[in-house]
Amino acid sequence: MKKAMLLAFIGLFVGVVSLNAQCGSKKKHHVKSASYERGHKDIVDIAIGSDVHTTLVAAVKAADLVNVLKGDGPFTVFAPTDLAFERLPEGTVETLLKPKNKSKLSSVLTYHVIPTRLKASELVAAINASGGEFEMKTVQGTILRATMKGNEVVLVDAQGNISKITNTDLKGTNGYVHVIDAVVLP
Image 1 (cartoon, rainbow, N blue to C red):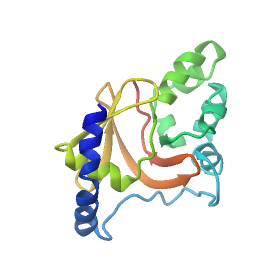
Image 2: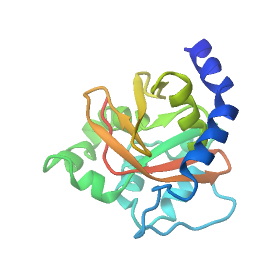
Image 3: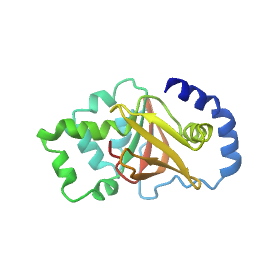
């Protein structure tokens, strides 16, 4: 995996230049309804300062992951919006938030985190350098795949479900947050 990541990141600079030339102002990574506070905040503070991540913040607190995600990192978090959590089958969030399901909730949440700083342009370059699909080992321990669908980056979870990245490069002191429109599942 390290060798694959190294090879993927060698292509970063070529890929970033080509991405910028190809996409220009055509990037579609914006969530109009979201509001994010700016400043020197870690990735948890970014989520707390967002008006569309209240469910994610509640879940991170319920799983006792706040201190971990406030750590040095580095982290990249693919942060599902409240609407993404609402799209799960009825009762799923409520069930996961119960204390007896803390380990399952932790597993789902840590599947949204990779242990590196990864900007959107670097992710696109890695996808291009690896032949169209880039595998990322999550903090949870299993693989989350990234690929392109037109000009958009999508994540494909272990069950084959797809989540689109809708807002990118929310930079924290310990990593990056990229907003996604669906919860990914290990």
